[in-house]
Image (tube, rainbow, N blue to C red; front, side, top):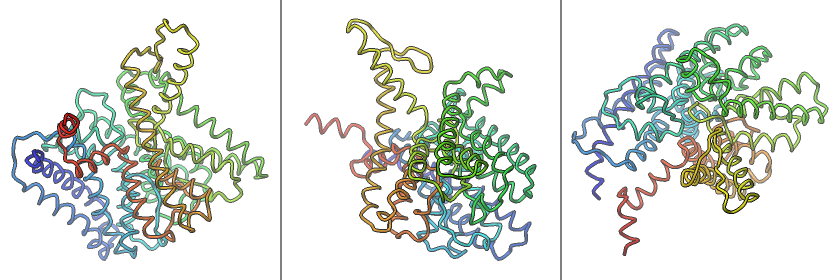
Length: 494
């Protein structure tokens, strides 16, 4: 129980994050004042007050100089995401959503998953609609990363909290500097997206909300029909590069800016893989949809857009899958769980882990065909890797891939016992793949009519998947066994 002495420090860290997110939630309130939606301000204010109140209370915990162990800090990140998911849901309750639906909506927005259980978005005040879009935008790069850019000297356990958010990638000497540079890049991408969307004919209000949800690869919309509401081919074509831009490692933007050259970004193996997957998926969908007899223009429109929404894990969709056969839907389900690149706003298993799996397979085949005495290095990103470095690289990727597949299998087995899900097997498979990939495109199975227990399970699934499983696993094991890393070794010694 030695970790108990470290809890006040962790509590103060969590409090700092809640205070900063609560402060950021004032933006929708300001917008509500501009639109004179006075009736909606108390609704929005409930989340603001809850975050500021709980955050302030946690900051009052006694301060000590004890540095918390890494496992406790990592678990704290998982706790932060649950808290903002629950505290951010209050405005949705006031617009008529049941509490379970509201919590689901909040977690879906924060994690950038993009599923929605709302049925009357057109009736919502702009204050709440912007809050929903803003949640996706903040969650796109990470709640802790957002907090670090605002309060770099707030006393946060910066390294462990930041690195356990799942999408963090250091390209600066410190995590604070990395977070700040990523958010600068993020702001520039958002502004470019808003301007590009405005050129397609949307008004400023729609453009801002669509940009927030596209750059963050969130995928929600302020209209019940989603992107289909606009029926705007130009918008859909503009969104393709915007969504992919959000799924590109942000370090490439930084390297390009510093070097003033496109050489680095054009020769990056991961970016080439991302573009290659997009082209392959597009080609496969074009062929598959052409076979169904769909008109050529519709085939190209739906194929290109859905390919980009899948590889970027955005979740926007310009189709309800009517007329699609079993094969293209199942094929796309595999892509949505993979997601985009690390160090971006994309969710999913991530392309770099799939890349490692293919490199490991190639290495194993080469090694098998050579003489047993021959040393055959594994090549990763064009560089040779030897010995334990090879084993560690493969093990880390393989473990995470297996954890994602385990999460998928457990959820699928539970759901298929329910007639609601088993009667539409293909739709259930696609939507679960999409949920675990934090994608959000849907065949309609995941929606307001599904059982409440399923909404609770998917709330947990979105949370676990967004943090890439490990932080939540550490939290659960820590609660059961304690956070002392020596406990396991003592038991083994006994």
